Amino acid sequence: MKIVEKYSHLNGEEFLMVHNMKIYDEIKDVISKVDASKFLTKESKEKTKVGRTLYNPDAINREFKRLFTEYEWEEVRRDYFISSNYDLVKVLEPLSYAEQKEYVKEHELKLLHSYNQTDFVKEKIAVEIQLGKYFAVTYDLFVKHLSFYNAGIINLGIEIVPSKELQTEMSSGVPFFEKEVHNVLRHGRTTPPVPIIIFGVSQ
Image (cartoon, rainbow, N blue to C red; front, side, top):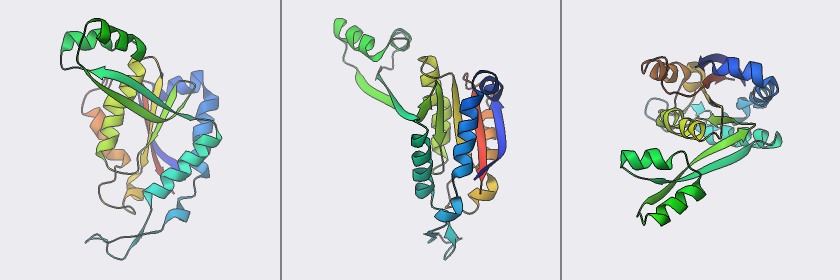
């Protein structure tokens, strides 16, 4: 596969080029090693695409996972307690999970536990591959990457999505580059407040 389009939010790409070109090269290398043509195996049953052979996103995701794992990228999980009380959230968010747990116990609070999980993290750079449902990209950009960034776990979030060309050869409901960049731009130039790169990829 290849990167055909890219969007750098809050100087995300510039940050990577200045501070960790090695990691940038690794990411581009992984993308280039994914031969999506091998995964043109899904027979469509959708009304508008009946009988067409489409790209299988699950199989492509597994190939990305295999390659990123070879480069020693790791899954990272951030546990935390949730609350609808603004003042309490501001107290808890800067704390580690162990510190949050201690605070909750000390103040005898009854709070629910939750977590965010990112598939690939290395040297404080997070990468998410989204070839499935479009709503997952918004969650990544406005929740996952932001949560990990505010906690100091990452300095940059990267989202890899299909180009429009590739998306037309996949099932309905799959995200595509132009729309996801539009969704970021419509919120203004500083939202979400985390450096991000969005890559649009194609075969």
